[in-house]
Amino acid sequence: MFLLLFVATIFVSQHQIKIIKEMAGVEAGKEEEATAVRITGKSHVKPGKLIGRKECQLVTFDLPYLAFYYNQKLLFYKNDGCGEFEDKVEKLKEGLRVVLEEFYQLGGKLGKDDDEVLRVDYDDDMDGVEVVEAVAEGITVDELTGDDGTSSFKELIPFNGVLNLEGLHRPLLSIQLTKLKDGIAMGCAFNHAVLDGTSTWHFMSSWAQICNGTSSSVVVPPFLDRTKARNTRVKLDLSPVVSCNGDDATKQGPPAPQMREKLFRFSEAAVDKIKSRANSTPPPSDGSKPFSTFQSLAVHIWRHVSQARNLKPEDYTVFTVFADCRKRVDPPMPDSYFGNLIQAIFTATAAGLLLENPPSFGALVIQKAIESHDAKAIDERNKAWEAAPKIFQFKDAGVNCVAVGSSPRFKVYEVDFGWGKPVGVRSGSNNRFDGMVYLYQGKSGGRSIDVEITMEAQAMEKLEKDKEFLMEV
Image (cartoon, rainbow, N blue to C red; front, side, top):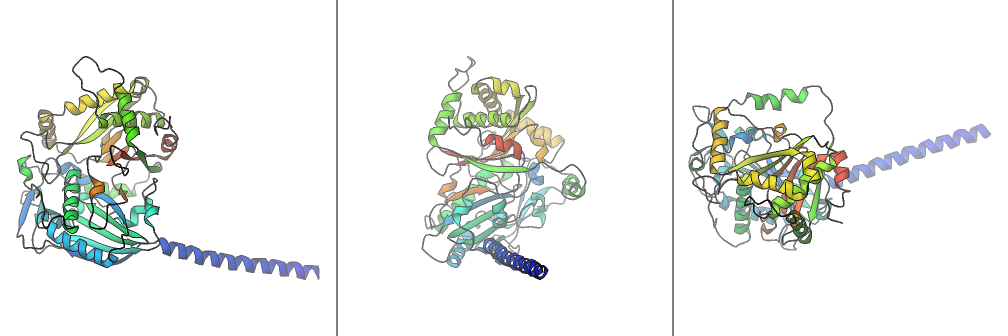
């Protein structure tokens, strides 16, 4: 009798476990379905008028970025109670048709001329800009405004892991509009061989102004003749890019260290305090200027990242900034210059010197590197590259590097399409490596700055506990 009861008990327990597992599976499936992003449509948008055949040579400032990935940006907006998602999509498409009449290069493709020199081609029979529509009604805007990682963004932004070189057969701009539970996410993937951050936000603000009714056409048209900045024709050997994108992915090797991304928000008061600290030590009597907000924040990041990495005093660390050269080149180019007019400025020092000295030491190293990068230095860099062209890869950023892209000067929170300013602006998962930093205008306004950092997980854990870095002491 006891044996029968024991067997019955076991049977009931296993049966219950089976039911529980099935129920858990159903719930997990429901949860996964609720947070999943479902593509509902795909279309293409062309300029609202005929443009004809246009060809624009890519120049020395553009070509090094072919082995970078598409530049991804994500903006998310809360519902304003005005208009359905479908109405907003149509409004965005209508505005896109107008803005592309000036920014038509984004509706084209990469091409080559008879000498294999790369260029942007546009023709009226091309597809135009790709627009993807999606639904993720289980995701709220608040879930996207957290400070950790970009893994939750991946399905909201197109062209993950797509190289700029693939613009030979892919759209140069792809936009995904996703309906959220309480808002809309706009994920954009721009071909970085075609435009830099300044041009990206010029396009985005122009598009928004048309959609929100501020203007009926582009107020400041893009300056499209890249050859005015540089007119050297460079033929590239693209085979290293192709092999890097293919064969290397299948090679066996040690597993890559786990990376983490995090957004650190520095209030206006914190930024002012960082700047004050950097300037608290009088500069040497060599005519050095007071350190700017950028230089002060840059050295703050550089020092504390180096500390979190546990670098030895003799270890070298590189600081890199992708600087806008529009006003540095001779002759200067207008702010509306459309393309890449940036160059990487590198400087390095020993970790011991960086950390044992006051912040002014590193700030001066950065300041001198930036100020010495004048028209002559830019020209020399271009000539050297043209003599021996090399496609940049992330490993070229430098040893123990901190590399800064984007700029808090970009008015990202002013991009209002007619239903309010974005609740958040973030970068996607492309173009991230150990030490990559993106700076954004702070959401809290004023002089506040948001800092996105990618680091090895172990070092990131130390950085996010560093109260001095966080300005909590």
